[in-house]
Image (tube, rainbow, N blue to C red; front, side):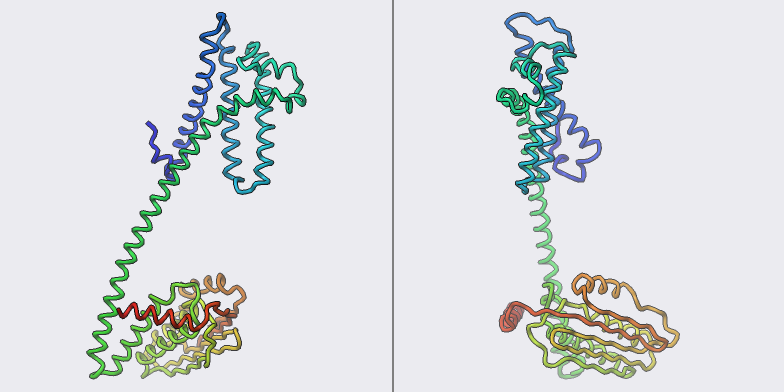
Amino acid sequence: MIRLDIVADNTKYHGWTRVGFHALLISGIVLLIFSAYVPWFLYPSAPLDYPFKTYAGPIIRDAFCVVVQYYFLVFLFTRYARKPLLLVIGMAVYYFILFTCYYYTSYLVKHYCGLPDDYTGSISHFDRTPYWKALFHPATFYHLMFIIERAFYPLALKLLIEIYRRQVRNANLQQDYNRLELDFLKNQISPHFLFNVLNSIYALTEEESPRAAKIVQQLSGMMRYSLYETADVTVPLYKELAFIRNYVELEQLRTSKRLTLETSYPNPVDEMLVIAPFVLITFIENAFKHGVGSTTKKSFVKIDLTLRDEVLHLSIVNSKPVNGKKTIGGLGLVNVRKRLAALYPDHRLQVLDDALQYTMTLTLTLSKSKIPAATLKAGVLEVKADQIR
């Protein structure tokens, strides 16, 4: 029994399984051809006393030509179905190959297998007609129609299998989509729960510890931005800068006693400018992590963001801990370098590791959104309103 699920599964349909399927297909073609010759061999008007090879000759000839047709047409339509010109050329090559196979195998059937003629008369036709004359002879088309018609059966089977494969593939995709949708809905529960907790903490600390309340409020805003406003390839530059400001302020609150911080941000910012989300924050996070977080002594961080037309320049200088481990160039920087290479091929990035400090400079050429700024703001307000509801 043929298991169609194996045929439809590309992870299982390979190796000996695939060889076995094609062997079964070729065996079916031979049986199909044999069934066409049974009436002529077994029930002739006069008894036929031929040796075995005489009976086998035309069956092998027709089966061989059908197999050649099947694999050539499957290859042709699989590769060039959407290229009409190449498909037309391929069909001309198909006719030439089919005719050549049928012409010379008919010659072998007569002169080697000893069959004078078959029930269609094709052997005698090709025997008395030269190759190039028979190539476009009207009678040739008549004789080839019999062998072309027999190739329809394996091709129809191939079509049915492909339809079944697509149905299985679509069903699997639908299952994957449903699973992803359920996972997404489950993942939505955790952020909403966390936001509710943060709002409760903010309400509890607002009067007794305004500093803690401010941290909770900034953290909530950063999380909301990360979860809900960075799904697209690009985000408005002013939103990304607001996210960076909140992060820097949180780090300053955490390490204010031992940190000297200098920041400079562009103002005003064109609301139409967009940037890939989180391509800048990695460098800023590294400055605090490796320059401040790895020591308990006094340290400094200088962040300078400038904007001239559509060119954004980021410069970061941070202190280097005495006898600190060399941690620059970690996984975060490797990933952000790959993103920059893909999104901003003309970017300029320079990272210097001096004895006392790290220096990093980045220059990006930004683009402008095609959506008006007012529309962007309206969309943001609508999202926030939905979140509140």
